[in-house]
Every structure is written in structure tokens, then in C-alpha cells.
Length: 210
Image (spheres, rainbow, N blue to C red):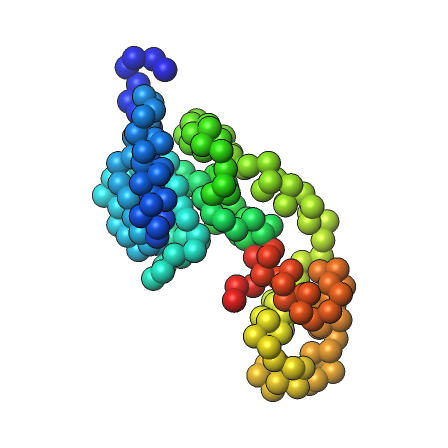
């Protein structure tokens, strides 16, 4: 690092104080970066971003009041140059793609090695994308899959809620045959053995949330 450059200013967003403290401790001993602010939910993240204009934001996805994806969208809408790295325990490919489409420059799992987090912050600050190997693998594994349609996702969500076909048909205002057709398509697209397996895959891949 050249002597005159200022450190990378980081905003740490996570609803667990221990995680934020861990990140702050890790970054605090680096000569080329510093944590300028912390936030515990999406709303706080937007406020802190406006106040501090950090170079790189580390964003958790699952948070109370406002989740990380909504906060990411709001920040990127107001500040298109914002550089955000999603830091999460969720490795579902649909969730990952959603975050990347929303403008995230990086996506790391929380079990990531510390060195990987630091190198990703530096890389994203320099304008590169940062995806951990597991995340790249998840995206590649399902790259050729047929995506579920919004109608199929609605059915899958109700399956996960424990509803039978007739109940799903009543709730969505369609015939039971239509529901059966969608269930068949869902099982085929997700390569699932049965309805329960489909719901498990849907949650794991981030297609639906329970």
C-alpha cells in the first residue's frame, strides 16, 4: 500500500452484534481498511450508508425489520456506485443470483476464511467481483436448470406450508388439475422425489423462504 492512500472504509451490517464485532476486530488490525459504521438491520444500514458513504458495505441477508436484499436494492437505487458484499449463511443459488441482480459485487458465506473476506473487500474496492468458490459452484451447478415460474413458486410456497392440492387450488383460485400440473412441473424442474423433497430443495436453494 502506498503511504498516501486512505484506508478502505467499511460498513458492517448484521443483526448479530458478535458477528459485527468479529468483523470490526478483523478489519481493525489491517493497515489498509477501517470499519466506519455498523448496523443491525436494513433500515439502519441505509441510514448509516447515507451518513458515512462507505467504500465497501458487508451486508447480511436475513435481518429483522428490513432484510439485506431490500436494503441492498434501496442503497443501490440511491447510490448506484455503492459496492456491497453479501455475507450470509445462505448458499442457495437463487438467493445468490437475486443478490447479484440487485447489484451486489460479492457474495461470501459466513464460514469463509478470514483471509478470503479481506481479499474480497480489497478486490471489490478495486472494482472486481468477489464470489467464494462454494458460491460459484452453486451457481454453476444449476446454470442450465429451467427456472420455476412465479405461478409454480406460489404453489411450492403453499406446499412448504403443508397445504394439500385442493387447499392450494382454493387459495390460488385455480382448479385442482392446474395445481397437479404445476406440482408435476415443479418436481421435474427441481429433480425432486416428492412434494416434501421439493419444498426442502426450494428452501435450500433460496427459491422460497419459510
